[in-house]
Image (cartoon, rainbow, N blue to C red):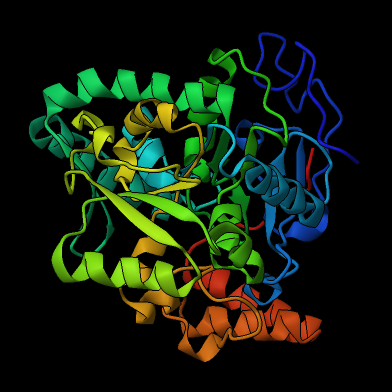
Length: 384
């Protein structure tokens, strides 16, 4: 199928098509059926990205406004970005737990956790909420790498402005929202608040303006990334200085970039930064941002460049230190991927992935049962 525009009754518009009012596809085989409040899009599809198949199992899914094949979806996304290079403004911005926390605050834990774990997570959330009221918002991409920091008063002011900025990106470009669904709950507890936020945006959500979060990482780290970088004049918007900046620039040059120009921003307060575009010379073709959760405030300032502006996030950390490619999914393509080197999952999960990808269904099911018990995940109920 093709990713076509949606009518005013489509998802995200006043006539919101909820799972109760539209046909849904929620395969029982997912073993992670979401409670109905979390089903904020009418479809869940197998989550796969060409060139990164070894990152996924048959239990990985993502929410979708249409029953589109994820490989076709990724191809359409990549084609749209490549077509805009050097030609027109196209904002591409990722949203995950950090952005959700910034926009919506603490949310009740997932209903898929067992009661005891939900209670503990609720207490932890209340403690974090109380701390935030006193100290403000703070988030980190990795230890020592701030994703944003603001006082309580700033959070109240800039939170609303950033909310509007993220909606503008949805209207004009692409929001890469993390709506992944798997056997262990992660950030699905934000889905109800996100669904309300999208409905209030009055912008139809389609495969054109929403893609899964990891599509962006796969675009920048996949085998076809030379189409983005080779011979290009790049603009980087990032806080790195000194040796780290040098390593990032060298990594981009090694990828084939013809020139790398730099706009320096603050390490943790990008939401308040004012960009000086006068330092940019020539005709840049693509812009890469690493600006934390306040990044949405920068996109409109970059509009005058009239080029794709891609929120690269953690990829900058990998360009600065290649060893960090084992710290996040989709940093290593299949041809060099080694599960033994991966550091973002534990040994039990690695065993589950090996069994699943090796076709050992019974073994995978046994490992999965142990994982769910050890992490207090509730038994799945038949979908209603």
